[in-house]
Amino acid sequence: MSEPVYVARSTIEKVAGVHRRAHLEPGAVVEYGVHGPIKEHYKLHAEPDLPLPVDYVVAAAGG
Image (cartoon, rainbow, N blue to C red; front, side):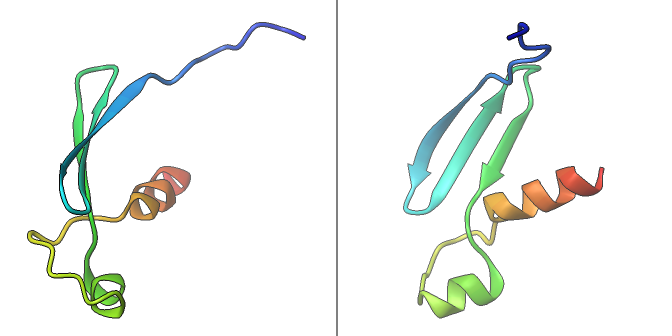
């Protein structure tokens, strides 16, 4: 098997409740959480409204 061309490196920290912060290798910081219908469905009172991880996956696939 050949060597990988790219290895993604990141760390994720729990900020509070469902709020997470990801630190990506080039220095970018991404905030994750919940919003909208997901927040309502699970009766979460998280503040602030933040994108779900799947929102970033969908955006990345479109990019």
